[in-house]
Length: 125
Image 1 (cartoon, helix red, strand yellow):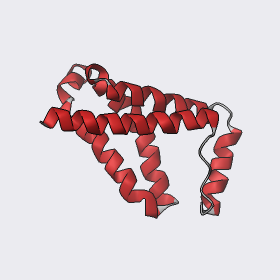
Image 2 (cartoon, helix red, strand yellow):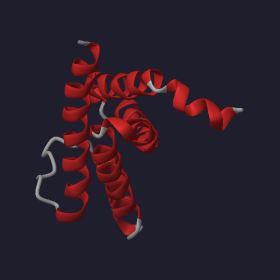
Image 3 (cartoon, helix red, strand yellow):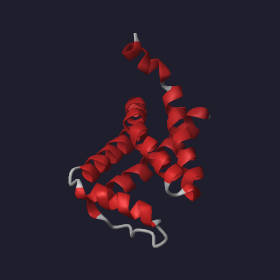
């Protein structure tokens, strides 16, 4: 039962990150009207660095695909981890109202990492 729940959660988590990553390339989701001005400035600066958003989008798509596939889920969780750190920090600093969702996503990723901890042991030995 636990494996089925983990699969469904990872499927939804992965699809969400695939969608977010594809949006970095195709810009099909509108920017919220109530975005704070300070966050708009930061995002504008990120857009000036031409390679940054495609890199983040690639990491989101790759991590989303990998986390859906059980055999490579551990790798997907590690690929998504730095992106989630950025999401959590952005929500802490600029948009605290989005923090609960960011923390839920962070918890899901940590759950996947903990469930696959034996696969990471060769890296630390």
